[in-house]
Image: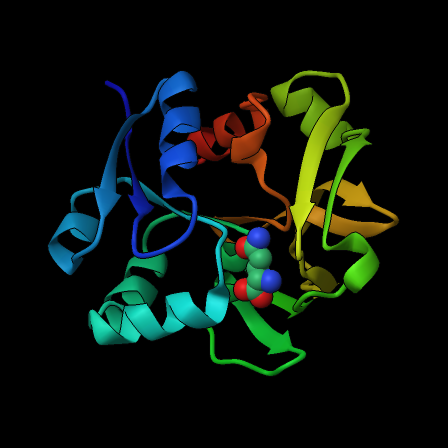
Length: 193
Ligand code: GLN
């Protein structure tokens, strides 16, 4: 049976994630309430603006349900979503779900890399799991993962820094895998459900 994957739909580009997950063979729905959250096997937190998303999560009383959900179920956070998953957030420091043992620095590429498309060569483990070939990565005011815990598995790097990393049961991408039509990153997440 197809896995049911929710996309947090408070803010950001959740629609493109739904399309990518559909293409990758999942059954998808938008998540805006704790009840909807409980109905899905895994969740995607899209890119957008992490401060705004954090505020909306609090307003909707979803922050604690989301944290508890992440203690049992896999979450895939992209860009702002990755910032929310990390244990430590800097520049500026910000509250987060703390579900992944990562330290991230927001907007860390500076003005010259507000937005950029690059081709990345997958690490061996990624290629093995999901197939060979470079992956196009779109960075938009992206964070940098400054530290990953000892159990982290790094699937992709850009300039030496992890940009696709699994830690615990979760997956974080600092780029936007939903924007390129290459759904291997979403497939990697679906494998964990
Ligand atoms: N710069 C944003 C933040 O700090 C993230 C950007 C994105 O999700 N594309 O939340």
